[in-house]
Length: 484
Ligand code: FAD
Ligand code: SF4
Image 1 (cartoon, rainbow, N blue to C red):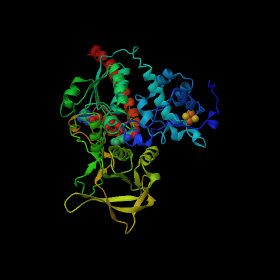
Image 2: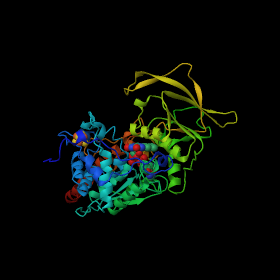
Image 3: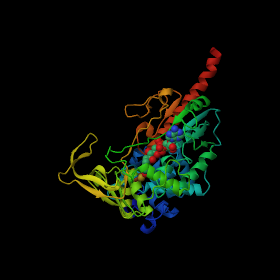
Image 4: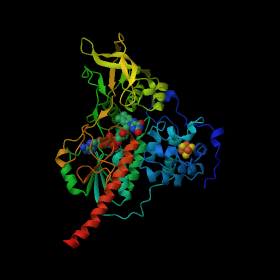
């Protein structure tokens, strides 16, 4: 059925969308990639050879129908491509921008062997942005309302994906979040140079158009009780994320000028969006020598934010080498282009203060890689005699996140495991049901800090589980009435 030429990839190189000039990137918080135009989108899509066994699709956590929507994009059938993209993914325009494609679909593409993967992420973004610009919206005209109502707590990618699938099943979804805007880490973690707020606003409009209601600036357990929510809804979905910042237990963490990554990023975003600072005051690193500790996505977002704030120097200290960094390689490349200095094989030991209590810098020791640990990554070991202080005016700690179970979980029989992650399995009749049968959970709070696309994948299954549970109850109720 596939009539497109099969060998475009030989003569036609992989191209990525152009990036804005470095000088613009170093100062502005807008997305760094220009969009593909319709020709570039089609041209790159035509490189796909429509593999019989599409590795890209299998590697994608939501199993996007990648070769199929590439074919539609190659033929200019953008609206159909957008329809298809939404069959498997609730936020494709967002995944097109911030998924680590080099580790997922593009990393698995057959054409990597000598030709360069199809530019899948950029085409995904192109398809959905173009369809939105042309006025396409999801069509729910065939959906029959069930009269059932579900509370979704957390408006991050997990909560939004769950609400999307509930709406498509005729279930009313009311989404609560403590932040003044939807998106969770999409809005308040990931900076605008990766994902602009206007993209989230467009998605908010679409979700509201589907009948989803948002109750924002409302923390469950503080502004409204979980008990009242559970009483007023047929089921609950929790997508609360993980927010206990790891600090490596470094001595001197309370030294002024030492900041937690998310406090820094959220304060910056709230200031840019002209929102009240709330618990996240703006941290201005302009003119400062900044050291960021860590090597993941969060660390990359901090170093690149500091560059844009006008820091005089930005250094990233990481304990393994470049090949073993958890952050996406393309993000590391972007950071280097923008002027970040990377220092590999460095173990921080303490935050050092001057005699007057002000910040001196980071005490560190150089490391070399030893034997692989349980995760298969080689364990860093200290190099004798290499200990010194790396001077800094500000230090940002970006070591990652642990679970942050809510204090009210116990009262409602919502069990957590030894790491504080909520127990909710994909297996069983109702995927991602917690130990309280009326409560479902997914995203980072179940699998630990991970990715946007895995949160979406799990939350969509959870939503289907909720829909199945409510259908089973609806069938059981009349039977019970007859029997009773
Ligand atoms: P979250 O996005 O954390 O959303 C949880 C929501 O629940 C939040 O809005 C929170 O306010 C709300 N909430 C919590 N408790 C309550 C309560 N009691 N009442 C009301 N609301 C509550 N992943 C990628 O794929 N690509 C990236 O480039 C990337 N970059 C990242 C950069 C940073 C700085 C960080 C921190 C993470 C990054 N990630 C990235 C990971 C990704 O953002 C998360 O895996 C994903 O957002 C998890 O989704 P979630 O819905 O489970 O949780
Ligand atoms: Fe196309 Fe690459 Fe997927 Fe094969 S692996 S179907 S070439 S995108």
